[in-house]
Image (cartoon, rainbow, N blue to C red):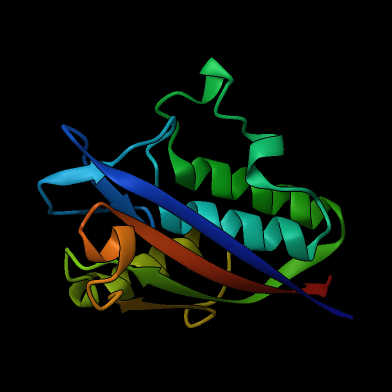
Length: 158
C-alpha cells in the first residue's frame, strides 16, 4: 500500500534571525518568524508525512504554545515525526517540495537541502526533491514579506 500526504507551511520574514531552510543556513538579511527555527521546508515535509500516515499535523505534536519548542531545531522535529510515521508501520518512499519566495534565490542551495533532508530521514539520496519558484510579484510572497512551502510525501508499508 502507498499513502500520499500534502503539507504546507508559510512564515513571514523577521529581522535578527538566521534563515534556515531544509536544515541549511541560507545567507539572507532576514530569517523567518516562528517558535522554533521556523524552517518552513521541514515543517511542510513534517505535515506531509504525518498526513500520509493519518497521524495529525505538526501543531498537534509540536504546538507553538509549548515553551519546550522555543528555538527548536526543525531537523529534530522532522526526525521525531519520521519516527512516529515508522512506528505506524510506514517508510518514506519519496518527497517532493516547492519553496515559493522572491528572495533569496535558492537554486544554489537546493541540492544541499535535499541531501540534508534525506540524511535526517535515513532515506536514499535522490528520494527528496526540491524546487524553488517565485510568486511573480503577487501577494505577501511577491512583496517579499515571507516564504511558503508545499510538500508531498509518499509513504509505503515497511
